[in-house]
Length: 144
Image 1 (cartoon, one colour):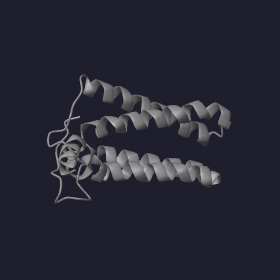
Image 2 (image 1 turned 45 degrees about the vertical axis):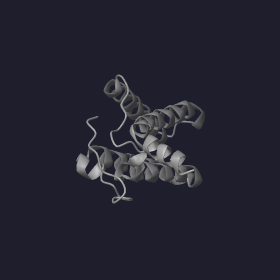
Image 3 (image 1 turned 120 degrees about the vertical axis):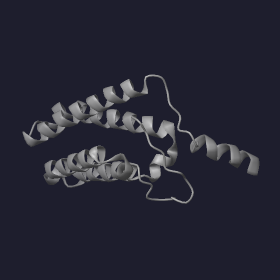
Image 4 (image 1 turned 120 degrees about the horizontal axis):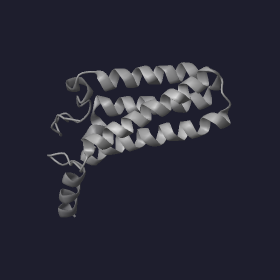
């Protein structure tokens, strides 16, 4: 049983993060799509557009965000213990809250935007800082 576990952990948490062809271009395209669709969504809520008009933008923002996060997860699951991933969880909670307390959706989306902007643009040494399991995993520096 130990043999299976010893093969499983390195596959999920490789010492050298995995890459895939055109990673930089794919991430730039996904980030652009995510910012665009999220901006349209926030603007639509600010200007009180009907939910039916905004639903495709909501799905596009969610899917582009998840795909962007998936590119990080593909490299290594260690990122789940970094500040960046914790910010992603906080943003998901804030977005879920927008559906629970609908009257505050614009404020919650703005807070989500602020959290995302700050964590995306802070120096990598903070963004990729391991918050949990620091003694178990080594931090690594992503170039993209």
